[in-house]
Amino acid sequence: MKTRVLAAMALTILFSSCSDFLEEEPQTGLTEAQVYSKMDNIEPALLGSFTSWRNLRKDRPGLYFDLGTDESQQGIYQVINDANQAGLDLYNNFLSQENNALGGQWNDRWPIVNITALSIFYLNSNTEPDTARRDLLLGEASFLRAAVMFELGTYWGSVPINDKGRSAEFGGRRQPVDQVFNYIVNDLLVAIEKLPVTQENPQYPTKGVAQALLGKVYMTAPEASGLRDYTLAKNAFEAVINSGRYSLMDNYSKLFNPNFQNNQESLYEFQFNNTYPDNNQIQWQTGSRAVANLNQYAYFGGYDLILPTEYCLNDTSAGGIWETGDQRKNLSIRYDFTYRGQRPTLPAGFGGDELDPHIKKYEDIRTDATQSFWQCGKNKPYIRYADVLLMYAEALNELGQTGNAEGYVNQVRTRAFGGTLPAGMAWSGNSQNEFREKILDERMRELAFEGWRRMDLLRTGKLVQLVRARNKWANQNGTIAEFHNLYPIPLSEISQNPEINPGDQNPGY
Image 1 (cartoon, rainbow, N blue to C red):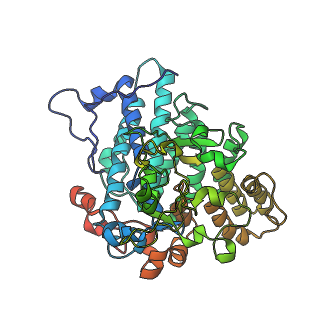
Image 2 (cartoon, one colour):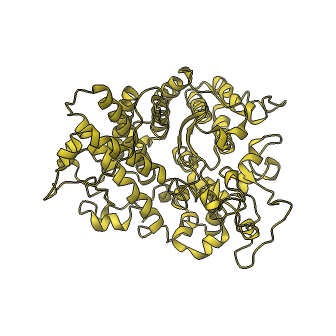
């Protein structure tokens, strides 16, 4: 496959609202049909959309969905100084349709949906002779629309469907969740059919990540949609496992070492580097202010946006998740803030948690003493093979194959304990219900801060129960309720989209 280069697409308009579906042709210049009739134009538009999808993981906004879980929560200073953002953990009246943090997450996803929908529509009628190229672009566009719609449908529920062939039927109205998830499934089936096993450019998806995402969709689809199907999920994950293309890295520490990016365990990761605009700035938000004050070039400095919850950072003996000998603990969470022999001191007036344990996975030692930690640029995982094994095990357990499921969990745990499971650490003899309870802890240990915790809590129906018990701010405020399983439709959408009215808001808001 030839190397693809991002080209300027002056005629490709990215809208901030899902109601802007390019219904009107421009008065001058090329029409939409003229632009999207050529694969030479669709290709750079899609590359731009993949970059936009990546950028949703950057900096502060890229961490918003991680807040308000039982895994991570905001630092004290952030809660005190940003009421809208604080609402994501407090589950108070600021978690509302006026919340700008959530509004931005909604608005930034719809332009990607729109570009992919246009690409799919015109590729399906494209008559250019290079059918292999057309199939590849169709697979990429279908995967990306599915991935973004999966986020929208899971977090907001009933959302509009952008299908250019059915615009008159769907318009900008919210559609039932069964239709939304049917579209997601169908897009992924197209992606699996059309995508290659490998891609030269890791920014583009492959068949394996589409299969894994399909398995996740079957595990996550609301039961009311009729699409939750553990057998189909099992089959999708099994296809990844049986492909022989993926395996666990021998050492957990390599997963977050920039020398081992896009490794044998990676189905897909978001590509970053240490140069703007391709830096991810995650360390800026996850590091310690106390360390930043000690040295602005210390690679684990930052500004305390998001910290592990006590449940996530403590040992099992203290009511947390970590078992003795699990190497993932100190590779995922920083407990020691000594920098070059110096111990930072707490700054006055910022809340006092700046030297509490912090997220460690995204520390980028390449910046140390040379660049500000704002320039951090390690890749961010999307789906790893360990995630596939754990999800596959979960599907097996739901199908009554608990003993078989335990073997796949033990593969992941063996790596976590350095290659040999100590006596008593292998999973064996669990009941189906015991497995259900324990797998959520195992997923937190393996995948902490990689962006899946909210979805895990939503699909298992545990969000309200576990966040109320384990998230400091939600516990203190005491207002988290069942309606918080969905986010509110932003007021900006209701104001701009004539087909979504105040009465269409999610219940509770």
